[in-house]
Amino acid sequence: MKMIGINFSRYFVAFFWFSFCLILSFHSNASSNSKSVKEGVSITETIPKNTSLLNNWNSIGGKAKLSLNSVGNNVELKATNVYEINANNFVQLVAEPQTGYLFSYWSLDGQKVSENSVYEFLMLEKDILVSAHFIQITLPTVQITSPIEKSVYGGLDIIEVNIEATSGLGEIEKVQLFLNENLISTFYEFPYKYNLKEYSEGEYAIKAIATDNTGQFSISEVIKFSIEKANVAPTVSISSPAQNASFFIGDNISITANAADADGTIAKVEFYYGNTLLGTDTTSPYSFTWANLPMGSFALTAKATDNKGTATVSSVVNINVVEKPNVAPTVAITAPNANSQFIQGDNISITAN
Image (cartoon, rainbow, N blue to C red; front, side):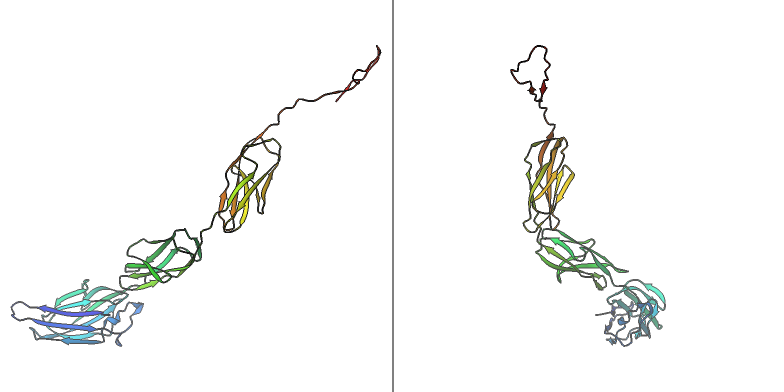
């Protein structure tokens, strides 16, 4: 990767009728001259191993030395390149930081002169030291906040993927989302969200890669989740009592229900009147005895829950509980017998049931 290039553009100083071309080119590899700087802000690789000076025509003024180096955290590196440049030549310096670094500013003999990565000036008639100052950027951070590890979804569920990515001094340039190592989306701005839907049953793994504006990148932890076949809800209906059946206060009735689950088992059946739970049965046949009925009208339902937690509520069966009607008493004389004869003045006993 190119790190720092120094270009001497065509330039003609006033009062002269000729032009010159002076080019300094860097061929950057990892250099044995590199020196680490405290706190890790060195950009030592921008000091090239091989430097060539080509097509140097004589110009006005005498030659002076241009010393060029890179500085991290305001600490100068030992590796310095020195060039002899004719005074009053036009010089163009271009700073191209390597991955993980940002250019900060140029200094000339220790004095800050420019924050532009391209620095242009006329060569002085004295030796000068020009330094390119760089700032190291920490790796970006990236994590998937949803879904969570080992989540289980149904085949019809929409799975929302949320990604958080930040960078220190730099900026997040892009965030890439991978599903089972296949790139499925690239985000260039916040928020970093994506909806997964209509995927078949199976195990899945997602990860995100965040890249900053210097080319550095970080990879999130892999999140694994699974998609299962959509659960079929159970069926349930009340078989007894019948719709609009009537009962008397104090009666005992048996409420029974039919329940089934096409892709699993019935875990329980609950019996309600309104929102009040009367009782629960976990084995077939599913029933509950409601004793000592109170007076009133009641809406009965049964709620069946399957082994995966999906529940279905039956249709309402209405019943009425009323007072028992008044029945006239019965009476019969048991003595004396019909057509019995007595003598005047007798005492007789009359009995009745």
